[in-house]
Length: 278
Image (tube, rainbow, N blue to C red; front, top):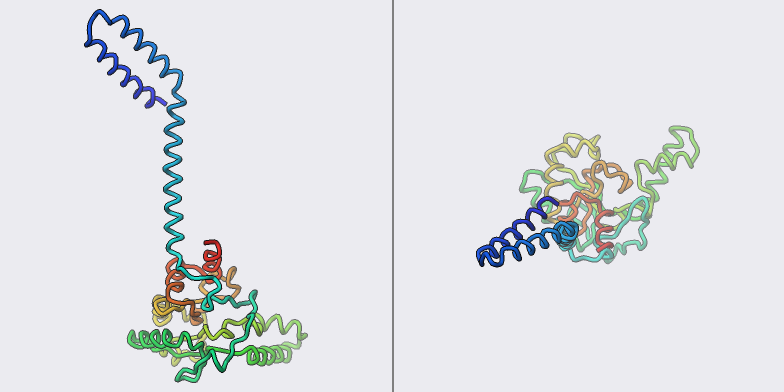
């Protein structure tokens, strides 16, 4: 407020000085005019303050709008319904089973994956080889039927070992094995991979969270997005994914989406929410 009044006073003084240079004959008239202008300025400081405040708020709003537009513009121009972004997990059951005869292709290691991601996976595997971290695939496509067999077998083993009911054994089994129909491996877009050194030296703990601290796992996490893959179940995001940290579990989502997800440290669930809100 003081700055506003000071500014007004300066203007008035300059105006008064202009009148003084005119002639002594108009001195009284000039002084009367000056007093009138001072009184007007003193009565309306709030108006000037409001005007400045409105301008500042308008500028701030425009800045925020530009920032929001920039963030939105960074989102890849893809549909949340794209085949590469199908959401399957503990709370999202697979809606349509994969047609194994037409949608899948076999890799040289015998594992099956969606044929549409084969070239990107092969490029990724070659890059890992060149970097000194040749990949070993531990799992890829699994049908709902094969998952049912594995799940049921594990339930029976837990019942026999612990002498508990089937219901209790099923609950325990769900802690380590995804319920049939709810596994990403049913899509043909998920692969479990580790580097050769880890696979050969730690065969009994191949799929352990500690793998994430190894050089090979770090290279995979830092480079897989270039080829369309993400670490699907990142550390400390179990509240969203409902799956514990799995540095070996990669999911294909496409290069643009993978790079955006990785850059912004998102889960697939969060990314889909952003796409749906766009």
